[in-house]
Structure formats: C-alpha cells, structure tokens
Length: 376
Image 1 (spheres, rainbow, N blue to C red):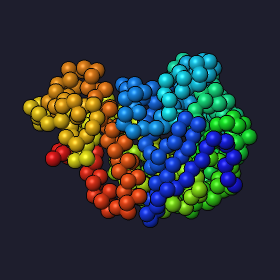
Image 2 (cartoon, rainbow, N blue to C red):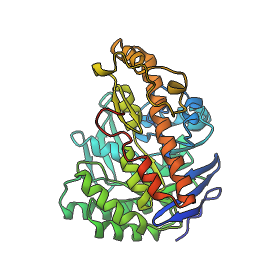
Image 3 (spheres, one colour):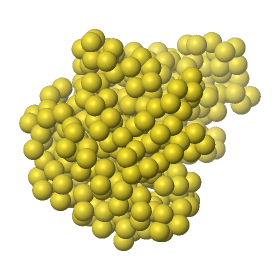
C-alpha cells in the first residue's frame, strides 16, 4: 500500500546494483540519499550548534522521543514551535519511538500487549509508553518523520521470541498508523534478528501498510557483526523499492559502505560524536586515538583533505592531543565536527559514485575509514 502523507515523497535518481541514490522530499526541504542523520538525543547534537551540524552536509537530525518525553516534556516543546523551533534546526527532523530505550531498560520495564511500563531513569516515576502515546508525543515534538513503536528483541534471542516480537510489532504498527498526525510521515520498523526469512516476511507484511518509509531495526544489539552484515546484505534490497530504507543505529564507516551497497538509503548512529568525546578522530586512513603519545609532536591535521573547521583551521594532532589531555572543551567540538564531516563526505561520495557508476572506486576510497591502527 502506498503512503498517503501529504508533503512527502521519495524518488530514486540513480541505481547501480542494489546501491541507489535518491531524494526524500519533506516540508523542511529535500534530503539527498544515501544520507547520514546525526543524533541529537536531547534536541541537540552534542557539542555542536545547528549551523555547524548543517555544514557537515546533514539535512536530517534525529531526536529521542523517550528522553524528550521525560525532559523537558513534549507539551513544552510544542509551545516553542515544535522541535524545529525549540532546537533552531531549519532542516528535516526524525524522532525515534522510544522502543529501543524501552529495550535497554530491561531491568526496570515490563512489556505487555498494551505497551511498555517502566520507571524513569531520572526520578523513578512510573511511565507507560503505548503505540498511541508514542504517536501523541512524537506529534507534539513535530518532527517531519516519526517512527512506529516496536519490539526490539536481543541479538541472541531464540527464534520463537523474535517471531513473537515481529507479530507484536505488526499489531503495534497498525495502532501507530491509526494514531499518527495526518501531516507527519511515519516509518514502520522491520524486525527479525539475523533470520533472513523472518526479515523478508516482515518487510513484505509492513509494505502492505501505508508507511512513508521502512526501517531495519534490531541490529547492532549483540549479534556478531558478520551476521549483521550478511543479513543486511540479503534483506535490504528486498524492502519495498518505492520507499526509503532506513538502517537504524548503525554504525561505523565500514558499516555504511557495506549497507549502501546493499540498498540502504538512511542511517543514524551516535558513534561519530560519541567517539569524538572519547578522543577518537575518524579519518579515511584510519582512527586517531588522541591520548596516544605518538601524537604528542605530530604537526599534521587529522586529514589534510578534510574541509571541516578542525582540519581547515590547521589545528594539529599535537594541539588536539594537548586539549584532550588537558580536558579542554574545544577538542570535543573540533573532533565532533570533523567526525560528522567525514560521514557527510562518505554519503556524498556514495551519491556521486552511484550516479557515475563507480562503486569500486567508492569502496576503495573508504576501505580504511575509521579502521583501527595508526593512520598514514
């Protein structure tokens, strides 16, 4: 069933094998795909302002429904012009449903057919997240794209538990569709662990519903990375080609390259900004761990070809190491901007390479990005 939300559309502009470039149109502008969406958990991409985030090439930022529901509250956000106005982000926004946070709160939540009952990690307050409440909260937050509430089983869960999670996710999908704002796009979430047959069947089932896009959820939750890649490669291209395909919470530059080749259009992950705050800069040649003594006298920028504020400004690895060891806030900003710029360059190169038919060159250019070891 085709999606029906006004103001949204998706079209593929080029395809080579399973890899494809396209345009996702939203009320807050067009988003070229493949695209990487920086994570702004609390309505802010940590350490960076909206202009800095946009300068990395990002045209969608992700907000976290669970955290914004608890603090400051969706009603307050709505009173300030939705999350766009509150956070001063002029481009498209996506909010997750809170389902993954419920998954991660296994020691303080109970799951029933109606939803998740849990205690707030902030103050212990009793909370209940149902599909209807997830849609109400995301409606007030006002992002362009909302996500359905789903069940995310652990990576090593037995097959029967994963099958039950799929069934409940589909029932909740229908409840979310019935409760969503008419002017807000909604994506369904495909579950199935690393079982290819379950994934393909669930993708087909959700494709019968009027979602604006379809996401692959429940990856990077404890399964071996090789199994994740194998499953994504087998399943992604079988998800409805007329809608954007979103791989949730994944991952490294290597993950993005493999998943783009498999047919994925959209990504989000905390890795580039979290690694930056831990003193790890990602480059095309490998990873720079700033606390290491090898960089104490290193006069090179992180990447001479990088256009980010850090590299273009000529800040040396030695200076960045000094800032990190001295616990200066500036290093968190500079390296966060650098890492997100790397991701922005990766997806921009993917789009250009797909259009030019140069997938081999794309793979070669990004083969070492973010890898372990001393970069050349």
